[in-house]
Length: 120
View 1 (spheres, rainbow, N blue to C red):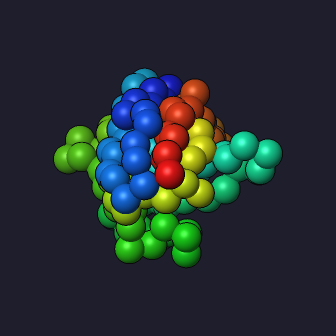
View 2 (view 1 turned 120 degrees about the horizontal axis):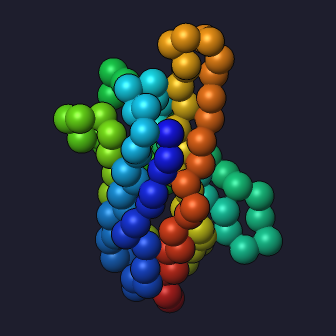
């Protein structure tokens, strides 16, 4: 499985941005998609996750401002970000977890990241 993110850019405080993450390869093995972010000088932090059944969870810092969703194919995940703040500035990473149906080994893959900059 490979992941490619897009949609990052520069936005003003209070603005909106939508990130996309497209999975390729053995995508049927994916169960959960997540978004993480890494701000300058900080560790990578959890942002949001969505399961195969579309159950979602959010970090407290983004709840009610960000929305994670998956398309009907299940191969693409989105992160709609609204009411953006300067502290949302970070590189956003897509993450996918799943299980190999033959070996039953769990796997985890990461995208290359997309930069979101919120100007004040």
